[in-house]
Image (cartoon, rainbow, N blue to C red):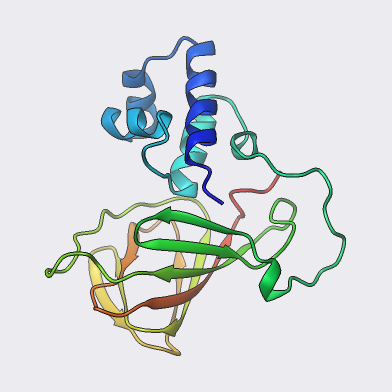
Length: 190
């Protein structure tokens, strides 16, 4: 399911209701005007932590940007064929591992990170947010950057990060990388 257009329209609607300019939203969120403009037009996707920053400035809940059915299955089991997925961009597909992502304190996901498009290693922008992150490599080699300390993680390796430390990860190989991530607090929690 691709939410780019829906999210972008809702951001623009809330921003114009509040009479905020793109420049103001950019200054308050630390996201570029060009990125925000593309986001509002549905031309790019947004990471959950960036969407949370936008929601805070717009005095909204992250859930306001998504259209989900009201019925929630009460079972605690999520079958592999029932996983919801989101295409983050051309290089990342994210699968949520629980049906009700909005009521639990942690957010477990499988992330498939495609090979970087270019021949040279990807320069990744570090970001920070509240909480903790756990990463477990299922397949491939993940390059992890925490406070500019770069480490390659192999299948079976894991990392537990205080999310306030600037961090990010990437796939600098020619093969798919598959990781399990768990974030707390859950940025989608109601």
